[in-house]
Structure formats: C-alpha cells, structure tokens
Image (tube, rainbow over all chains, first blue to last red; front, side, top):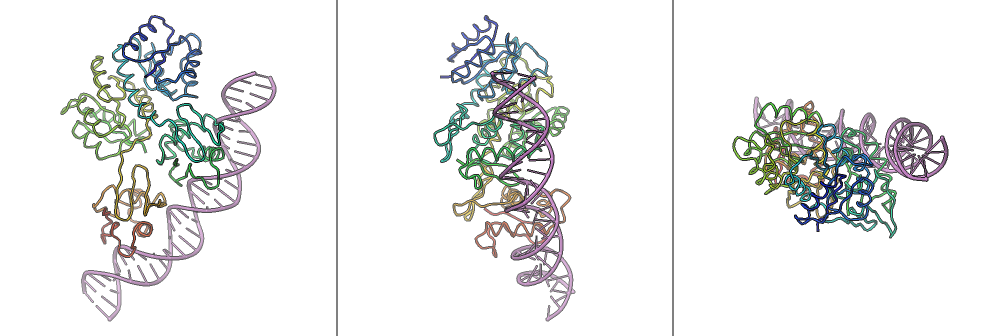
Length: 224
Length: 224
DNA sequence: CGCGCCTGTTAAGACGGCGTCAAGATCCGC
DNA sequence: GCGGATCTTGACGCCGTCTTAACAGGCGCG
C-alpha cells in the first residue's frame, strides 16, 4: 500500500487532495502544520510527502530540512510562490519536485507517479548487511554487534550514498557534491576526516577496512 | 564526472545550456533531434538527459518511450506547452520532471540537482570479458582468476579508453591527451611504462600479449 | 653487418594523496 | 547564555603512485 502524507493548512485543499488521492488508491494521512507533519513522518512509514510551504507554525523549508535529517522519503512541494529563488531554495533543501498553485490535480498525480516510480526501485533492498554491521536505509539506523551505532548527520549522508551503491566506486566529487553541495568538490579533506570516523565506528579493524574501501586518487567503495 | 545529454533543436538555447552546464561542472553532450539523441544515449554513459519535446524528426514522447526501453537514466523534459495533458503524458511516458519555457536557468539547475541527488550515476552495465580478465566499467573493477586486480588511477584511465573502443586502434596521441591532457602528446615514454604495467597485471604471458596489442609507430589496441 | 628508431623493462627518487590527530569554530538544545 | 556535540581547519608522517632516466631487445634499412 502506498501511503502519502499531505501537509497543508488549507482545510479545503487538504480535503480535496485526500479524496482525490484515496480515489486513486493511495493511503492518506494529513497534517496541518510543520510540527505535526514531522511527528507523523517519524511515526508512520511513508512512501511520499506532499508539503505546502506556507505553514502556520514553521517555515516550510525548515520542515523540509528537518525531515531530511532522518528520512529520505520523496517530497513534492506545493507553493503559492512562483519566484525561482523559492524553487531553488526548496529543491536544494531536499525537495524532489516543486509545483505552484494553482495546479491541476492530474498534473499533481502524474508528478506523484513519476516520483514513486523512482523510489520503488530504490526502496527495494532497504536493509544492507555486512558481517560487521547492518545499515537500515529506511529506518535510518545502523547496528553493530546488536547495538545501535550513533552516527552524526554528515556521517550518515556519506554512508547512505555509499551503501545505496554497493560495490560501486563513488568518486570523491560525487560524495562531496551530494553531502556538502556542488561547490565543495575540492574539499577532499572532509572526506578523509569522515571516512576515518566512519571506519572507527563500523570497521572491526580500522587499519585494514573490509567494507569501506579507498580507491586512491579516485574515491571510495562500499563492499557488503 | 557527471555527464548530461541536452536534446534541443534550437541552437541558441542549446548553446546557452551547454555553457551554463559546463560552467557548473557538468560534462555536456548535445543532440538536435530524436534520432541522434537516442544514438548518443546508447553510446555514452549518461547521468541525466534534458529533453525538449518539440523535436524536428520524432515526437518527443516517442523518443522518451524508446529511451526507457533500454535506459533508466533520469530525464528532465523541456516544453513550450503548458497544458496539463502534455505534462501528464510526458511524465507517464517516463519523464522525471517537466518544466515549461520560458524557464529560469537557476531553477533548471536546482531541479537537475534534485534529480541527480536521487540517482548516483545508474551507469549502464558495461562489462567486457576476455579469456584472461574481466573489466567492469560500471563498477570500476577488474578481476582476474576470480580475484580483484588493483589498478592505479592512471592505469585504469588507459585501460578504460582502450576497452571502451574494442578492436579499435587508439593512437598514442589520443591516449596521452585523454589520460594526461592535450599538452602531453609527446611523452610516449609514459605509455611504454604504463602499458608494461598493465600487461604485467593482466596478460598471462607478458612477452606475447593477446589483448593489449601494440601497433608499432602508431598506438595500441584492445582485443576482447 | 651496423646503425637508428621504437618499444619493453626496470629501478630509484620526487611527489602527492591518505589516514590520523587535535584544536578551534560553529551549531543546537536546554 | 551555557555546555555538548558536530563540523571545520590545519599539520604531519607514511605509503603508494607518478615521473624520470637508463638500458636491452627487436626490426627495418642502408
């Protein structure tokens, strides 16, 4: 069952979206402000979030950033603002799509399908195990020897990119631009520091890593 | 390197996009019609496609469908048509995003980043085998007798150029300029050293190579 | 047969990348 | 505003890679 969280403070729009989405076979939960939206996102496993930026309590972009701190669920942003700065800000904060009001319901549904099409493929193997540790991409957790491993946000982002592409070589530029942004493509210092920290937390033998491998001069690779 | 294919029949827009994208660090290839776009997509490994729907030869949606037959590369559709039927059609045909002309370049770039964020180079599965060794271009790995062969960055670059053009004669100048840069076209010494290293690592009998062949006075050739 | 050209081979030193550590800056919750 | 966690920044030693040079061998040609 595909479950969608709709966040909007306009009760009429909320109702219209719920009815439409349910008619198309989606399970719908709703929230009217940022606080309850974040709460709902932590409690229910979601396939997609439709997020209105104009919320009464918290700035929509802040909601988005906080959400991205613990979830990689696809987010479709609704907004009344047409300015390209707004779009850029939301997209760079982690939104996957951005449409402006007023919009056609059929377009919304089509964009929703396009987003879900992508995430279905990615969601498949949400738990990756190695002999030393386990990464649960959906729940955003890492366990080792039965206990939880505490990762900082940055550590998690790096690990996530690597684990989502097992056995693949990820270049330093790809990692840097995905975690810090496209402008940081030359700060390879960061990677050295964080890869060391990840290995200390995850690898049994830091000196000879077996799962987080270095390809000197190019990038890093995760081996299950 | 993130590579983008831009498909548009308007030379001005094409030029503007190429310059902008290159300025932001993307490698850009271009096509002006559907036929050459599909051809380019089969030949080059792509990270993303920007596709204008109004092409001179084939209907844009048809191009998209055909592309989806062999590739899951993210596609961002450009179109002059604002109608929601057009958007729905393109999105359901496999597009990941749809923006209408005229559009802001910053918005285009932001949407492009959002798409790339989801897919770290789902490179096509290009694996080339010989009786002695296997080259996995997507995973960036070389195996021989079941074990991994450790290649240095330079060794890999040379091998990659040769393997991507099987049976083709690659001149020393082509190799040098692709690996070391155009300024090194006369340092044929480098090639001698690295071809020897590659053969030692890959060829069963270094004295009589069977896959990494020399064309005296001209260049080298890879035979599967 | 001897010479020159090109290639293969090897080794040694220069160089740069990587892992590591620690201290300072910054952010965030309380 | 305070304290703790996180991120940034810089420095350093080590090790692998690249560069460079020298020599051997093959081949064609005069």
